[in-house]
Length: 246
Image (cartoon, rainbow, N blue to C red; front, side):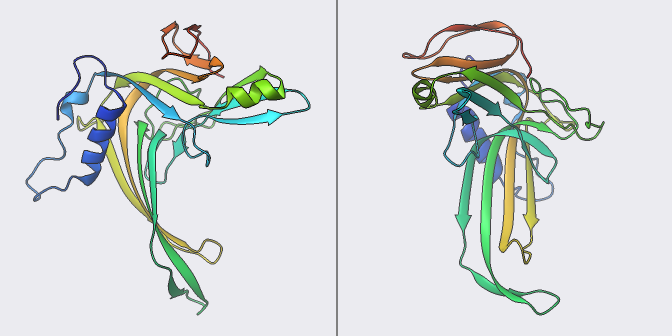
């Protein structure tokens, strides 16, 4: 797969992650997916917010105080990956009847999740996000990145339109030299959760250096990470990055 001469972009990273997700070893003597060319490369990707809050920055607004709070939160998985969600695909199967050990029969819906992201394996610091005091050697607990702004209701409404997160960093590798980590896991249905879940997650392993949240009308709203000048596309203001972690 061809790589751009300069930093990795959204399309290149997405193509590599999807290819890694779909890769099947021909046999036990074959090597894994070849992602060696990604190691050490700088990247910059853009992750827009979605209505479900499953990826990108989220927000809340206190109308009485006229305060807009922006939040960036990493995802945690049951498969030892911590990451920022890049793309999340969900598909539902046909419901089926299943019984538990107590002969209680319920209709269960199979759900398949395919997620690609940017982050790190558990226990490896992904950068930018502050570590919580509950972190251990094997598992890092990250605190959210938050920023509260004083904005009128009308200004806040405009500011959240087209809310996008820009993420910069450098691709790293795991102990086996791979730049992409993929994990598959399942979650069975329960009486309180009538979904049978299959998860497949592939994450570009990285050390994040800078996260910026902006929108076309308001420009840069929040920044975290190393200092430096950030350039944005037409219609978005330019601003200097500042070191901040909370």
